[in-house]
Length: 265
Picture 1 (cartoon, rainbow, N blue to C red):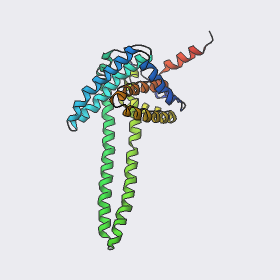
Picture 2: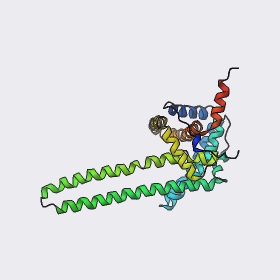
Picture 3: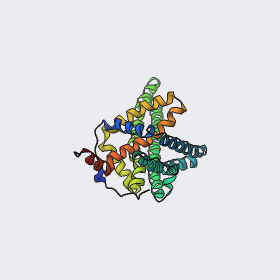
Picture 4: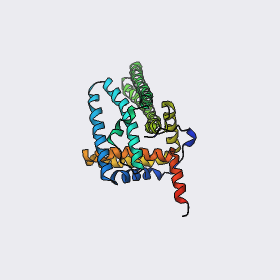
């Protein structure tokens, strides 16, 4: 594996909305274009889930460990995705590539995302508890017994709106986490820079990201109808399409290859 190349926020490129479909199309071509690649990806993802699932049996600590390991394994899968995108067959050992020199940065990024997520959850709990106590006190202060249910209902709608606003905060957190493993593993970015660049890339490609998300919802629905078999293929496609998006937004090799291909022979 070649050493990661540090990148800059100025390398983030904007893409049209149609690229969201292209990322999925590329991932399908890469995964199903060669039976050997397909076999390696299925084997890696089965091992991936077999290693992480038992951790979730332990309350809190197991969930935290599982989340941090998800970041580390995602880094390794980005290495496998780069090989696949270049027409190579990844090795099963690529799954564990994140435990190398970039392992600390991957864990650091995971900790930052986890801290941000816990902060939002804490905010939602505080808003919900505060709204509940406020509604009870307001209702208790009313002399008109018939007006109390209406007072509680009106405050309840306001609380629901506040909770939805808090829930919306998970959107930028997810955007920051999406491309961070690829930026750390393939570009040598620090945890903070990786999260910042991933968020900036998503903001500059909102149209493509929206189309990408809508396609995922459709594929997830189909995969669910197929039960376990559908998700065995959808999860590798998700990692490969993530790499396809990363390549479009950050990888300068794409521009070089496109420029060479467009030259007259």
